[in-house]
Image 1 (cartoon, rainbow, N blue to C red):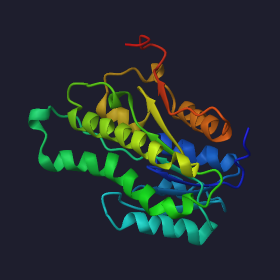
Image 2: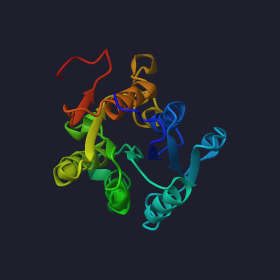
Image 3: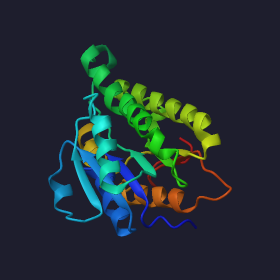
Image 4: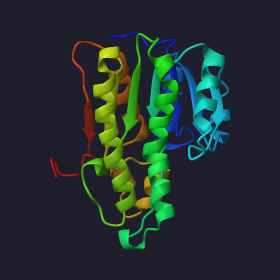
Length: 235
């Protein structure tokens, strides 16, 4: 197993849900973390010397240089990017405006690409360079009233596949983590019909990320798909 203590990570969408759980667990592992979100109150309460909180709106094209520059200035390098930030709004496709569709694509697809592009010179210097893109079950399935979200997550998975192929000779590991229902604020907003008691937890997703980071061996996992235990297998 690889030692990840001291490794430097950027985590997007870090203010709640999977992102916040990721920040807490990475800090517990001794990693240094740049956490970015529009909502930073919970992050500031963590109060760690190994944590740098960078408020950012990922629809703002100037955010990515700001995030990466802050990371390098504070910690001197970069090893891991967790593209976790996501946006979802329920609507029939026939009732989805161009502005709403573009917002889904900007947050869920364009932001990961631009952040990685900005960070690439620093990832290339790392011996543990890793990008984990938090995709979704809707990266491969379609659900009514989640059309724009589904399209964006399909695109994120496609982006992940190409990025992995384009960077594997530089020893950059690129993974797609595709969970089904996870008990987060986002799913409360988009799927209030689901029973929270049966959903996967954010920490379970983080544990998978830690497995990917620590098991940097000859065997490489490109994608991990996760379902909640009440969901039928292979459905």
